[in-house]
Length: 424
Image (cartoon, rainbow, N blue to C red; front, side):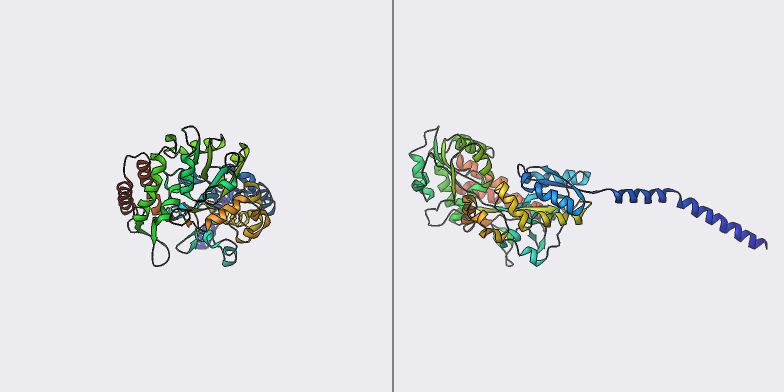
């Protein structure tokens, strides 16, 4: 009997303990979870600078359809990965961001962006090159929003279309008759590999060769082969003969080039679709066409750059973020974005849409794309920019001869790849 009473007392104590536990911290946690669940979901989207207008309507529609609040912030798209490295771990980073395709490999290696589940049907709506730019080891990490190449802008008030040289040598000769230190004929940022590659690769240079699987082989560096050296020698004469102003050396030189063009002091420059709106607002009577041919009969071969929408690995709403990427990059929204931003869409079907085919810019990009190559998207590409740009700058200023400068750049790139990417 005593045992029985003791047992009943013990059970009552346990029941009381359980009831106290049920009313304690766990209950508060459940209430907190319920409150969190009741909160409207939110997404933070990083869009490129001056491109947010192109997706505002699509964002509004997505918000209604998914009962979500989407906050859009414009940031320089080439710097977003850099910002994500800090903001992601701090909890202030985006759910969705937009980056250039050459940063995809680095972002994947560092675990900054998530793999997306994109079926073959959806992958099939984009051009093959644009979709390939979003893959690492066969896995998809983004959806393409726009394709761009450099092209030739010319000022119709300074040179008529029927007088345009069709070759780079023709522009060289034209410039010799126009350049006087204040006004110029043809200008390009040839001391930066992003622009100079159009000449170097046209003569047979390349960044990385290909491996047996069609990917990039970072041990095969071609920025100092015979073709690249020949191209650099050709570039050098524009600087040596004063056809380019001295102020365009260095990364900031592009601002000088663009200013000279908008001020009517340069007849033609190499730039990209991103300048359509600024040049139009500046009142320039501009025209565009593909890049000129080289003396060897080949066309200047620019990089094809692909901008994409990607999901941050730090996103707390990753599934919804992925849904947003698929929505914002679909055919309908890609067309709308193109109409507003004039960034050439990566959706294959839009290539034949009148809204695109009637555009001189889209036509120029499409023509140039035939002669251009994808910018490598492997992490080792990060080691190419600074050494090659430095070499090109010494070539432009006459401080080094092309072979010497490019050989040094190739050695530096090789050393940095071995130091930073061994075993990758």
